Amino acid sequence: MSDAYGDRGNKDRSIANPDGQGSVMPKVSGKSHAAPGGPFLIGDTMTGGYGKGPDILHACTIAVEKGEIAVIVGPNGAGKSTAMKAVFGMLDVRSGSVRLDGEDITELSPQARVGKGMGFVPQTSNIFTSMTVEENLEMGAFIRKDDYRDTIAQIYDLFPILKDKRNQAAGELSGGQRQQVAVGRALMTKPKVLMLDEPTAGVSPIVMDELFDRIIEVARTGIPILMVEQNARQALEIADKGYVLVQGANAYTGTGKELLADPAVRKSFLGG
Image (cartoon, rainbow, N blue to C red):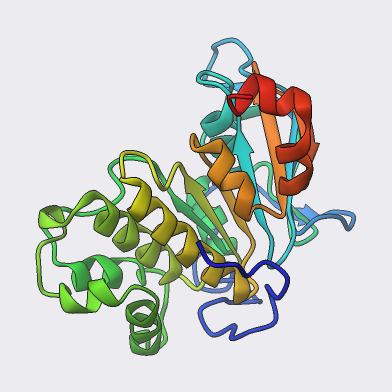
């Protein structure tokens, strides 16, 4: 993977949208209001679950700043993807809050959060398999009313293989290439923050390294990246900040280097 951690956030910001897309897409439900300062994106002491079911998250806090990569790791069933979905508004946060760029968005729907500048890439069913690569990217521009051709060109620069296969059905691509399409489509919204749910699931180690390199490049543009990962050791190697969850609660929090060096984390979650 690229050895480039110290200069994130100081390069081209053309893919990013510092002002978000809030003026383009109307709110679908709920209300938002000003909130005190703090991390650029934070799910603060979130407790909640799905529908009327039991709580899965227990006072869980995850946050990311501009230009950072924050990763959520932990054992299977720890609530990693659930925490991500809570930040994106896909389950009930019964206590705690979610704030984006100082604004409380706890009551907003996922659609409205996209309008506020959140880009979300789910682990599965994240592309339109019957559409071409370029049609998938164009679908990502659904909330935009400006000329998005420059953004497509930037995504092709980031993922050159997609340019070569732009007229090919996305369902014919390899797993790693599909993930690139999914990330590219999320970037088409010019997001203020990018959220990735296990982007390297099911891909080879070589493809995983390549995807992580591209994620680092996106972070360099200033876009905060919040990522859930099963490949904990590799993810923490590129992370500015890491969260280890156990049973829906924070077990360990620190920089990627701190967590990699922590004997308890290494023994319990990284294989010693």
